[in-house]
Length: 440
Image (tube, rainbow, N blue to C red; front, side, top):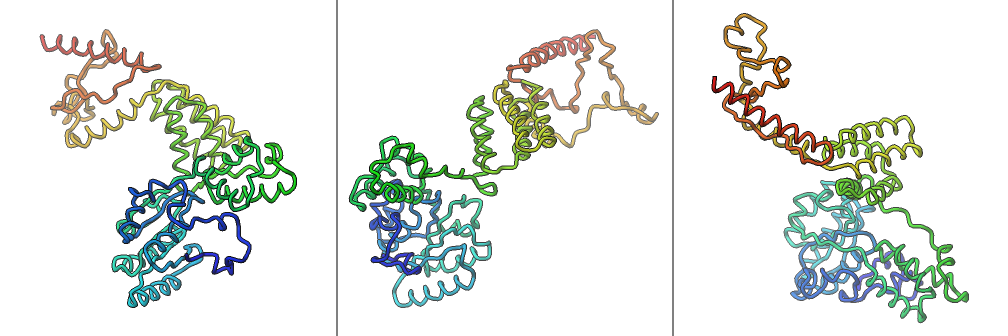
């Protein structure tokens, strides 16, 4: 099997990190990705047929993307060529493609593995297209970022995107068993320590095996380490958060939906995940203002005031004190009655405006500042609501030929309950007043 460490001078006899020493030798040994490598999985079917299509492996770090690419080459008899988009440029790509064309002329196919393929720019990604289309290379790209955001549509259309999952506890237990077999002794940790270590992994098998290796090295003749000793050995892992990537959108979505779902505990959790990950609190504050109108609206009119004031308060205070008004707003919004009636009113009004935007307002609600406009009927029949018995004339304000449209439909929670009752009363009163005028 081709080995990426050969380029660095590592061979079978040289010392190797534990993760490399127990790297799977067969596709069936890869853990946590049975949905891809199983007999019914897309990669399993490709290996069985002996024909490999170009694919993009999308998943978090340390879940086996590089290993899978190497094993796919072995399983299909392709020459394995590896590049990293971080260190490679157009010259490197040209060299790889020239070698692949020569290899193809000799009857040998090439699997080109590109790590962090999302780091190539548009022109570099476009350079793959003719070689993938002609079959000069079978491309296996690896990325931790959402391909739909980071890769060209043309390249995506020529590759199958396969999603790799973060490693869960059963998969990490298998890695422990392999490490124990390799080391020739049980992992020197109490059950509580194992639980803590697997929790620290964050689904990253490579990082996990690095910690396992540290445990073996530190334990030495100390015997089995307890939880307290382990915590001194391993430090808290930095929060996984990319302010410019998909993580940014995933976490703000989690915060938004937790607030919408009236779960202040989850909302506060995601808020702190974002703040500790380095997110700009101003961005969060702006989103809270949007949430106040989109998901709460008039069910609690104070929600918008609280969110807006939290944003202003943060500008005055900065961090760390500024997180208090933001947390205040998050909890207020999460516990407030919910209504998307304002959002739906916007959508309904936009649709109606698109369909009837060519119609003028009825003349009776138009001002008539000139004699000519008065002669044309501007303002004729307008009733000044304040002069009526109920301070409500019930007149028709939509364009002529357009009946009454239900644009705003309050849900009936919080203050919208009284608004709904008021609108129902006015609707009934409007009908009675219009019937009364029609009977005259």
